[in-house]
Length: 113
Image (cartoon, rainbow, N blue to C red; front, side):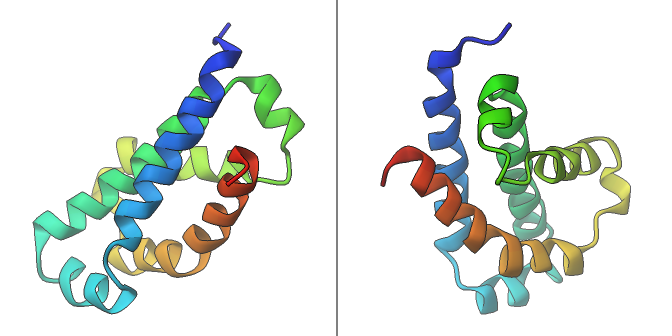
């Protein structure tokens, strides 16, 4: 069983990855991830970290906060790690545009920020 006291730390890891992603604008990501493999794989890794940290949260914590789409987040991590050859920059960009801002709000609420 995972240690419950580590849940806040995992949430901070998620928020840190989100803040790193949002350090650049959507336009900057659009300009880079299609032409710069380092930017593409950097963004991929940051989204992967979000999924890994979500997976490391205790099952109890995830169940208590089911308003967050933990399964989708962890599923994305699974794709990024195991089906790396299918990663689409377009889909990754959609995640950054549509999902990351909402997730950030949810994580900040969970952290009391």
